[in-house]
Image: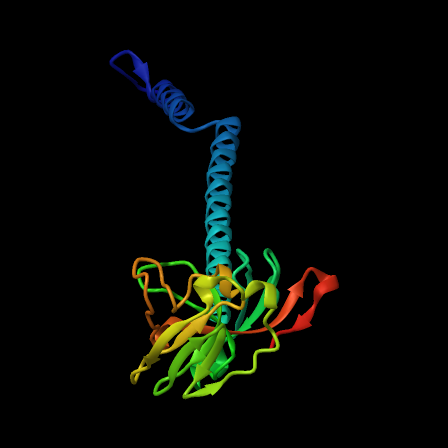
Length: 231
């Protein structure tokens, strides 16, 4: 066997093999390192999947809640809604804190009629009011000695309680003729009702427009022992 520079070829191969093995040992990951890297990748992937799942769940809840709110709003706007009585201006037809069932379709597709009990808005106010509709466009309405006259004829009002209609301030009102889009409402408790006879801020008769009449009171639904229709 020849020697070159003092080494045989066999010795050189042995040295080269040893160097290659050492280099491989230095660069190749061990089984433990491979396992750790694989586990870390799995944890990252799992975390990402959980994050996506949570995001989908949140989006699903937002869509569900948004849809529920939209449906409820549409029902209240176009079909019906419960409204609580606040005050005594409609006593004894309605009592404070009773809950009314108010319908909408008949006023969306038709016009309110005299003596309907209605939910309305007053000019410059945001809250709802409950009153009785006493005059529609074209009517002339007046009060003489506590009696309401519409177009010269006395209105029969069996729903009034005499003791709620005997104050001198309610005794008389000069005739008011309603225009094309004018409506006139009163509370059944004539002695204690701010309405078209004496609207806030005016101190004199003031009418409502059609758009300010938004619902028809049909029933009292609470308290349960007072459930009844409203005429």
